[in-house]
Image (cartoon, rainbow, N blue to C red; front, side, top):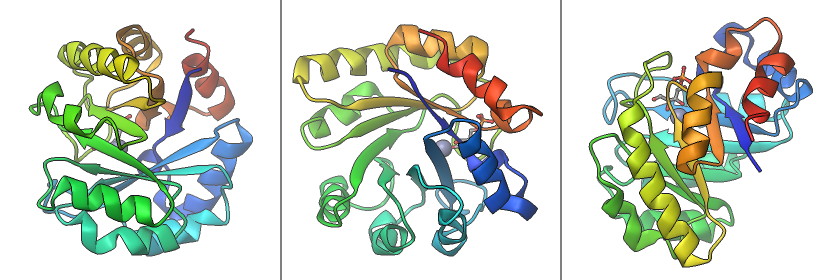
Length: 216
Ligand code: DX5
Ligand code: ZN
């Protein structure tokens, strides 16, 4: 089953709670929360206190994408603020196993992510201990960028390893996803689609969500 995780990064920041609520009423069961520190990526978004503020307006899955250099320092804050799943980048400064263990110890799901230049092989050693792999289909840092079709072999390779592992691991794509590129991602093996500008730019969120959900 395909899942869609709308990225709040493209929502109206003067109205985040209402935007989250509207997306949930439109049928979203996940909400993608992009945290940027201005160091790991060249942009700053928001942190745990802002996320906590949105929590009361959305009772689905909070899918937190940490684009930060030192995730270990902030795991507890994000768990306390209501994260259901925390995804961090393998390119960060911390030891990946330590971050995975710290997230797991707090009882939330764990995701690992790779930037476009990081090869599929980087995720392989961790497939026996994560719940999700996120393949970036743009350089992380900003919404509204162009989808990188050349990431699809990476998605397919990782899907093959996930199947071989016999474990239930979600395979997420993030960046430039719209009704067209969603098809390409699903064909390559992704089952969780993050979409920011495509969804939040539409007047009718429910209709926009359907164009992604009805891809199978
Ligand atoms: C980019 C973020 C994405 C972003 C996607 O660094 O991780 O989640 O919100 O935005 P779109 O869907 O507009 O490419
Ligand atoms: Zn993201």
